[in-house]
Each structure stands twice: as structure tokens, then as C-alpha cells.
Length: 421
Ligand code: HEM
Figure 1 (tube, protein in one colour):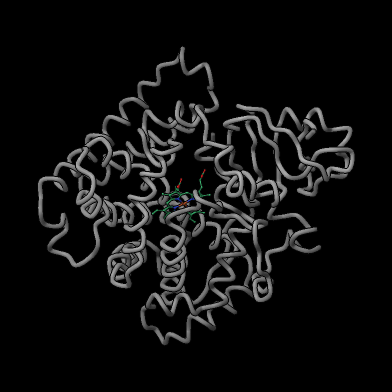
Figure 2: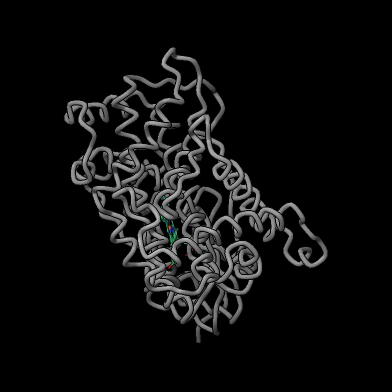
């Protein structure tokens, strides 16, 4: 018989040392960082777990029935529908579209060594580029003369996202609290997207037919005719790709500004391009750059914590019994949180220097279920290649324009929590 229990995540990210004393506490918390158990939840026992009703309750007022809120056959349908469009998004020609927005970004960075907040600019960049790829119309928030669409949409999107992030914290209190600003922001975003959906549906030509680049919504409208469904897909993809990529870029530059050795080494590979704008294949071949991105996502995963609900009584492979090697029982509806952040910093998995930023480790590291910045299994991130290409391109272009970087504040790295369930 499996035993009731859950594995332990210790304060330093190591686990298992004080299992017996803390067991009751950990059962309540239900936080795990064991690769074998995470693999079971996300892959081998995929059907035993789901996102659960709370995610739907909290996210659906903004995200509707989108890929981030739904389970079962509805999710499978969404995934099958969206996946082919992500393959097309990878085309080399999309880098030309991205370049337009990178140039807007470059124009916002002062050349007289005065201080600039790159993080804010990265958030604008990813909003501008994502809306262009998704809708064929960009918010162009990096342009000083941004159009009405840009400002109103970006502000409402941020407000709605903030509102969504508050809902899980309020829990049952949501029933007694009407967040009017949130409701209004959702309305504005929905109206904007509805107009673009309408255009995509009614036009047989591409929304951005005058340009050669790819428009996600237009492609999707070839298969989906339901307006609400198209709107939900579009908003879910925007929320999936925007902050995550901006966060990766901001963290990378936070580190580059403090690690002159890493900056110098990276410059060497950027210089091999001799000032040319990088092509997709060239970005993939820049090994040190890829190592840096992997290392940033190891130490600072964009989704540090995630969770699933048990759809039925089940068990996980390890963590039970006096020695922690037996299976552990998970009751139906029990929430299991998996801590990717803690797992990525475990010394038994990444070595005694696990807490150090060392891109070179990726020369020999071949991780499996112990490295999950993009999740794993059937619900693995659909935008992984897109995000890595976009980030790599932006980093290279910035380094081609600026020969050095300097940290202008002494504050320690501080995370910002955006969405959680
Ligand atoms: C550094 C950038 C990114 C990171 C670290 C990241 C990470 C993740 C993670 C951890 C999940 C799993 C969420 C869950 O199941 O609870 C996920 C799912 C997803 N991501 Fe990403 N993501 C990134 C960028 C993007 C981009 C740019 C897009 C789209 C343009 C995207 C589209 C998606 C979609 C559609 C899903 C849902 C997959 C499903 O449920 O079947 N992501 N991502």
C-alpha cells in the first residue's frame, strides 16, 4: 500500500534531510522538487493530474477558455490547433519583423552613457513584437509617437494581467469583491482583440498582406471560425509569450552587466558576425550564447513554481516511507506544487557550484527531468523555440551596437511575481 506523504523541499533547495519531522507540514504544503515525481505529474501519469478548477476560476474572466485555463479534450483540441502555427512562426523571415522593433528599442537607449532601465524597454519590445506576430498590428509602444491602439491596449492588458494575478491571492474572497478596474481592463482588451478577430475572419487576405511576415491570428482564422474561440487563443498566446521573454532578457542583461567575463566571452562570438545581422541558423550555432540562456533559465526560471491538481486518487514514484524511497499517495483534488526553482539549484543534481552562474557547465551538461524551464511532457511550452530565437536575436543586436555595459545600481536581484495559481 502506498503511504500518504510528500517529498520535502528544504530551505536551501536540498531535500530529504529532515523528512520525518517535517512530514506533516510538507503534506500540507505539497511542494516537490524531485525530477522523478515531476516527470510522473507532467508526463508518465499525465492523465492523473490537471490544472484544476482554481486556475479556471481565477484566469477565465480574462483568458476565457484558452490553452492556459483548460484541461482534457478541450485542451488537446487547442494544442493540436495551435501547434502547427508555432512551427511556421520559426521562419527566418520573421527576424526582419523583429528587427523593426529592435531598432525602435535601440533608438531608446542613450548613447552618452546615461543610465537606462532596460527592463522597461524589454517589456515594451516583447509587447510590440508579440502583437505584430499575433495580430499583424503592433502596439508600437517603443515609438514615442505610438498610436492610440498601442497605448490603450498595452495599459489595459497590463491592468487585466495584474487583476488576474490578484485573484488567486484573494481566493474565495473574490466572491465578495468586485474589481471594477479589472473588469473594465478585460473589456478593453477583449474589444480590441474582437475587432482584429473580425478583420481576420472577414478578410480572405492576410491582415498584414502588405508585409511579407507571418500573422498568427490570420492563419488560425483559416481553421477556427468561432469569434470567442479565436479571441481566447490570441489572448492566451500573448500572455504566454510577452512577460516570459521580457523577463528572460532583463535577467540576462542584469547578469551581463555584473559579469564582465561573460560579456567579454560573448562579445567574441558576436564579433564573428562582423556586424551582420544574425540569421536563425547563426543564432543557433552561437554556443556560448545558447549556454547563457540555458544558465539564466536554470537559476532564474520564469515559472519558478507551478502546480497541478490530482484528478483521481493516485501516487507518485518517490518520497514515501521512512527512507523516502516508496511511492507516496496523492488524494483526488490534492494540489501538488512543483518547485522548478528549487530543483534547478539542487547540488545533488547540478554539482556543488549549483548556485553559481556558470554557462560553461552546459558544455557537458545533458539534463533530463531535472531541468524544466519550459515544462515537460504533453503540456510543454509551445513557444520555446520562438522565445529563445527572439531573446538570442535581441541580445546579439544590442551587443553589436554597444561595446560595454555597466550596472548602475547595487540592489540585489529581486524577482517580480506576475501570474500565479
Ligand atoms: C522565456 C520564455 C518562456 C518560458 C520560460 C516559458 C515557459 C512556459 C512554461 C513553464 C509553460 C507551462 C505552463 C503550465 O503548464 O502551467 C509554458 C506553456 C506555454 N507556453 Fe511558454 N514560455 C516562454 C515563452 C513562450 C512564448 C514566446 C510563447 C508564445 C509565443 C509561449 C507559449 C506557450 C503556450 C501556448 C503554452 C501552453 C502549452 C499547453 O498548455 O499545452 N511561451 N511556457
